[in-house]
Image (tube, rainbow, N blue to C red; front, side, top):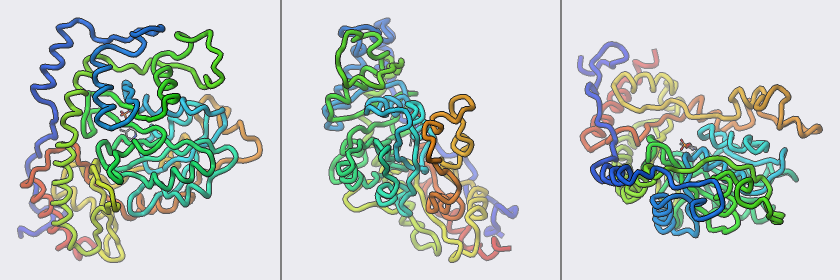
Length: 426
Ligand SMILES: *Cc1c(COP(=O)(O)O)cnc(C)c1O
């Protein structure tokens, strides 16, 4: 009786809510209190001068991040979406230029390209890492391609080494959306630091957070200066008399981080390593417990890399289980497994790309190219589509604590479902 699946009315394995993954403690309270007592909640001024670069907490956090990630420049912003827009804006693109990116990401990656009237071109992903496949990227390069916007999805680096080689050959820039993989390593370097521009999200759902926030990292002095400009209203406020030919795309925003967020982010940065280690511990325990299940593949970790496990993505093969992934998802969910995902993204299939309606109804910026119609049809990214429709399932790893006992229960729930695969076929 005990074995009856919760999906069919049996008792679920997990009955109580798991503990939240809460990374905030007294240290943040103290840091915030200090800022509040100072009365200065933002040090930025949108005019030339020292205050163009932000207040003491912002500058302290940037210095800390610069040292931590071992880069020449760390630039804070008020969200990573703002960070992506800032990064794309800094590389000097013309309206109608193309940027190759991943369909398997959060929408902000692709939309940041549209913000500069450039056109996202989607390259299919690698089946094991879910990151863009450099071979597919290379096939899509045209005269209009200006950059590759790669994503380190779920917590591990894309093949940035190969992407950088391709970029060198075709004179492109590489930007990494490393929102989900801060602190993950690739050949002993932090993800996001082995490309032209990388950066991390500090929103509540990520490994470390300041409520909302983001941090850009680069070793390039010119790009860094442009990004600091875009963050704070740009040349409209600081260099109207500049003769610098490089100053293109210098439409500025207010993407500035406040002092409270910066103070929190500084404390959070000290916790990044431990937070990642705790996610890795939980993921390794899960993989040990699940690897023997027929038709299930545990996450693949690239050689010479570490995985930050923002999402524990696993695959099911219905040829071996005899059951569709959605059926397995329903059964696992009914057993009470929290933060379970049965899909991720196929960004090219979103209405904005299907209809090519972004700004007004004139199909701008796609309408800039009169000869060639960008194809976003189903079928252009077969691996990403197949992962979505047939194979990929995941567990969000930054929502709950996932201590050893909790992970043990999750494994128990999986085993119960796998024991009952035959019943699920009906
Ligand atoms: C979270 C996330 C973003 C957006 O970051 P925000 O700080 O929420 O703006 C962008 N890309 C990816 C891959 C993300 O996971």
